[in-house]
Length: 436
Image 1 (cartoon, rainbow, N blue to C red):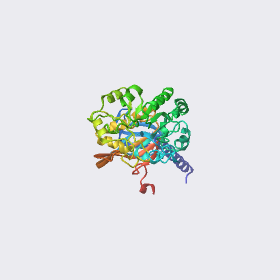
Image 2 (cartoon, rainbow, N blue to C red):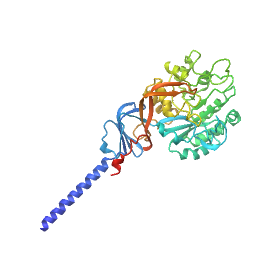
Image 3 (cartoon, rainbow, N blue to C red):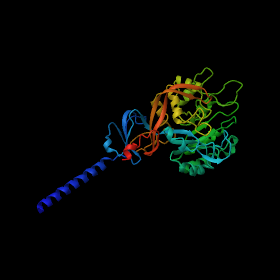
Image 4 (cartoon, rainbow, N blue to C red):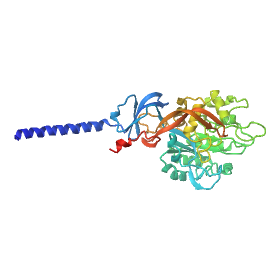
């Protein structure tokens, strides 16, 4: 063969190889997105997004939220058509200081005991990416909780710290006012300002506000809110006084929709937010307007249909939706975060209002505005969920059932851009494709 022809062939071959390399390089560069969630109905209250959008994720962060982002720009595309996409849910009332100590609280120890649960076992499957432990530890044992649970969980675990030094060790310890110390509580809070979000006052049976005073004292030192499980005293302490005389704006009343017998036969216990005529007490609206926060905190005994339904009908909505997840509540009327959110859907709340109270609202309440939204640059905690239609039964804490036709179900949960839960495999390749 003529040498000139051979040279030309080699030149053309080099050009072709070079061109192919450029094409491959261009394709790799075009696939700058790690994951693209495409075609879902995005609800992002902070950014006022409520419609069909694509969500692009890169390096564990939100890269872009826009319509019609090309699938060719992503290494992996998740088809979310017909599904909803939101920031990862925030459950701001749980008990996850799981351990083997034998102290008694509702049958099992909440503080480093069997009464608490491991967070990763219950969060992602219900769309939750962040939980806030509600006072299971105190200043004396918070470091144990951090090493044991916080540092070993894929779920982001934050905490309200108990005003009692040993946390929720039991009902007896909750009466020990000598162990309710604002200064050491504030000290440990200042050691971990990004993890400890506030102070819990709880299960006190004395006829005074001592735990609330001590918690607020720690809150003033740290500029953090308090959260109060209120109403174990005999006679009942006034929730009007709690809200309007003691609470500061931003302080939190949990177990908002508990029921309580207001008769003379039951002089103790928790006062309800509604009166004997099923009317929301006027000062409750006033307190919320003044910035007091009302949290659901469903739990095993703190959510009653008559209270919740009547309150919602009168326009009183909680600020935040939470589960009060612990061992004795998880398989009772309360199943998980998705179950509690579904209850508010069937009571007539819009999905937009439910998502607001499960994402951006709690992020603000716990002073973590880096969470609860899909802003560019935010950590990619994302929940993709379905709202099923059918016949579903929902139980309150007393075992009463409300039937509904909607059910929220988590399809895909991402924690920092990584798949933590995928119910139906929508993020994975098909077997027949991957096997070729």
